[in-house]
Image (cartoon, rainbow, N blue to C red; front, side, top):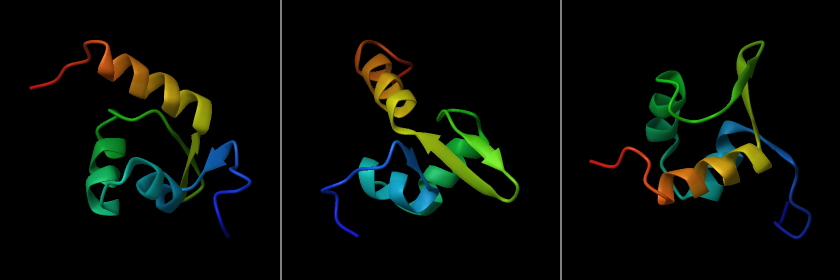
Length: 65
């Protein structure tokens, strides 16, 4: 589907596209607890609002090295 009707909850694949990151990199960050998400069964889910807040916090002086 297109981005014309963005969901409030994203899968790992959708979040990788949203953040323009490889899925493997995103999965590592999620496993390390560096990206806000919830595991439901065997699948990860991410709230768009939580991700946007996390991105804003990272831009405002998160732990960049």
